[in-house]
Amino acid sequence: MIVRYITAFVAALGVTALFGLVLIPFLRRKKAGQSILEIGPSWHRKKEGTPTMGGLMFIVGILAALLAVGYPEMLEGELSHLFVYIFALFFAAIGFLDDFQKLLKKQNLGLTASQKFILQLVVAIVFVLLLRFTGHLTPNLYIPFFNVTVPISEPAYLVLAAFIIVATVNAVNITDGADGLATGVTIPVAACFCAVASLWGAVHIGVLAAAMCGALFGFLLFNFYPARVFMGDTGSLFLGGMVCAMAFALDVPLILVPLGVVYIAETLSDIIQVTYFKLTKGKRVFKMAPLHHHFEMCGWSEYKLFFVFSGVSLLFAVISFFSVAGRYAVP
Image (cartoon, rainbow, N blue to C red; front, top):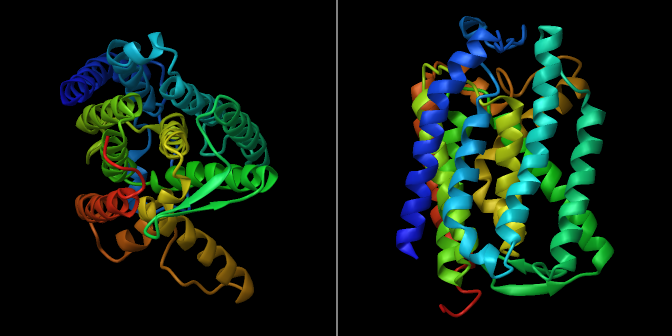
């Protein structure tokens, strides 16, 4: 099992890094550069023109590792890891449409919020129903830390699941606002899923999570400050899809509350800022939202942002692992 995880990690890292050497020059030739929001931090203007849609690198890297290492379970009819990847791929397609629209318009405005929401909601509902009908998911809600399961009705579960998925995907997207930030924060999340899957004998999900870790390390070679490429919505929506889909495939969606604490903090800071601004007619809680921009305005470098936010994510990944570790007897 450990050998397969290491193989998936190394294969994904290698393929991602090699693909990056080809993709980044291609994106430059096609002038697929990122447009920077005028309302963002002024020092981000120097990032204008940095190639975007780099998320294609780890999407390809994960697929290569999945096909190379995850095929034994596929041959036996276990397809949930393939469902997870395809689900994330649909979110990547939504992100790609958004990125493509931005490139066409030459500004940081792609699909409308309503268009993205409707597309994401449809994909979320189809995925939950697919897992439910194939027996990979129950309508019983496991509560981390308390080691109890609460049965709820099918309609209520579907509504809750759709909300969790759409919220998680967009939270990961919001976190992608500084060099390497979403990448660094998501690596411990993937590692936690790998550890949980290993503990419960879900080797197929463990292989996928290990591949995700490796691919993100490969991407970090190009995405760490100063970034030579951005993942774009193509990559961030894919990562969001992978994160929530693995939680559902392991039937522990509420693990995303402690595990996604950085994503949640980023999203809440945005909500609080907008709400307070409207209620007070122009006053702000944060210097700038989301949260990483606030700390940038306080003088934090992108190095510090990366290591502090990734460190917090790592801490809560460990906590999250122990919050669900007692659910099943170790196989």
